[in-house]
Image (tube, rainbow, N blue to C red; front, side, top):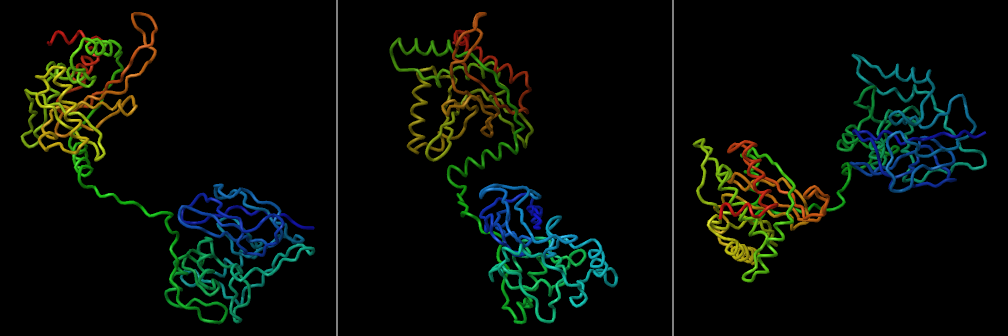
Length: 457
């Protein structure tokens, strides 16, 4: 009567805990020989053919191609011949799985591995007891495995079959691909365990043998080739300048961020009324810039920079307002000079001029430097919030998200209002949270009630 044995995905070594089934090499009903590769799996390090330690008929497979299995999960089941007291297979035990010798034999084998001074030695082939091979059922005799997957035969002087102390299928595959007879190697691992380094050393030393013939010296194949070449993009030009500036900002500035949601319905209505009155159209960015300059007049700590060498905070009496602009060449921050002295029409015109120059790539160095505060309207990208990096050496940046209809409590009633998220990232060296919160709250109040600005006009 046949006995069905379960073969689990073995420990593939090198800290790997799972593998993906790439290709099954056998199907249900196939007859397999001991140590015949049955499946090709891919780990994080290599493609591996996993050999089955049992000979017999495949009765079940677990997992389709492309499925990822953890170590120890059932891989397939094999029906072997009439059971003995304990079935045996190749003896090439994979970590915790595969075939094993009876307990008494294991003790004899392990006892023979301890050499002088505790050095691990391989048991001599002549003294190893022959191991019985498990055969397939009589109705389906197992054919001899193909030459590409058959175990390497030992030389005539070492025909006795003993357990080969190999754990990793990676090591066994490397030996099989390069014609190395593992029975001729003395393992350097615990209890004579044959490691990958032992096989590679044999290859380098030219001692690899197949049968009785010398094999040529073959270098070990790389573990796995990358699927695609990595693309390297030089950090130069605009991208390089941005990278350098943002990296310096992160290194030097201890930044913090606070944010608040605001009802922008009245601000949007005010802009509509202004544009309906005739004259040049006023942009929303210009209105936000006007709010910023008014807020900076009330909280001048945020319109400053830090002189690290002198250990001084330098407060500035003018506002050169930078604004983030995304172009085909990358992110640039043009600067509106003396923004505090401009009205909404002048700010709209200057924003339009600098934006067009940014897109055309004609901004001058003077138009890209000297900012004291930055306004970042990332709402144009369809996002609500952000924690931007301060534009060094400035001390703060106001971020504006998208303005979208949301449920909002207005005058005690639930209504749909135009809501925006405002965020302020600031240099904690120039002020504390109270100042930053006061600035942001004033900005939010102006957004919700534009008439608040009349006090400063």
